Image (cartoon, rainbow, N blue to C red; front, side, top):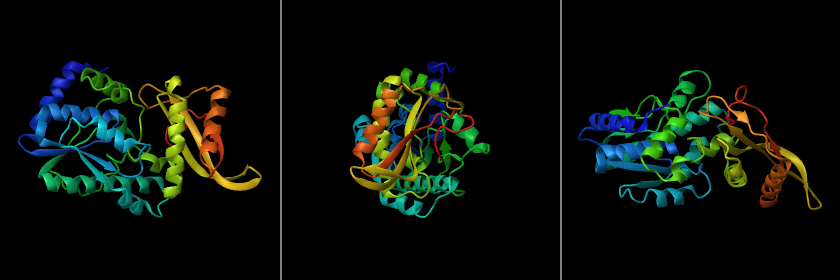
Length: 305
C-alpha cells in the first residue's frame, strides 16, 4: 500500500521538474484517477496547468454539469463539446479494440487543440498500473495507453500515478482532502458508454445505456460495489401493454474487487434485482428485458468490451 504523504511530496516535485516553466494540459474526466492527478499537478505548477474535460457524449448522466461544479475552483478549466466528433469517429465501428483506438485518438486530438491554444507542451494523465498491465498484455487497450495514436504532438506525457492501483489512488485522494464524491467515486471507463454498448455506437443505444447505468448506480449504492454498470447487449422480443416489441436487452453487472485486476460478481437479493429491471424497462420503452451477469473476473472482464 502506498504511503500517501511521502508519495504526494515526491510526485509534486517530479511533476514540477518534468514540466519546468512550460505549460501543461491535464485530461480530466471527473473520476478519482484523473482528479487526483489534477490535484497533484495543480499543486506542482499552479496556473501553468489547464484542466480539460472533453464531453464525448459517452459519459454518465449529468456528468458535464457535475464536472463544472466540482472543479469550478480551477479557473482555467476548459469544457470541450466534442459529442458530434466522437459519434462520427465511432460510426460503423463494431470491433472493441477499434472503438478504443478511435476514442483514444479523439481524446488526444482534442487535447492537442487546447494545448496549441494555451501554448502547452505537456499532457498530464491519470493513468494507473492496471491500465498499463492490461494494455501492455493482450487483454485490452486502454484509451489513454494502448489506445493512443502513434503520433502525439506533445513534448512529454506525465503520468504521476502510473505505478498505483485504484485503492492506492483513493488513499492519495483522501490525503489530498479531495471531496468524498471524488475520492470514493465508482470507477467509470475512459471510453465511457461506448464499451457498454455492444456493436456499433448509436445515439439510441447510448441513451438507453446512460439511463440504465443511472438506475443501476442509484439502486446499488447501499451495496457499496467496487463497480456497478449496465450494458446494452442487443435486441430481443418482449411484450409491453398489448403489443409485442423488439427491444433492447440490458445486462446489469455489479462486482466486488480490491484493485480491479480480479473481481467477484455480487450476490444481490431478488427484490433489488426486480426493482432494477422494473425501473429500467418501465423508464425506457425501447428496453424489452434485463438480465444479471453472475460471471467473475476472470474469466470475464468487468466491462463488456
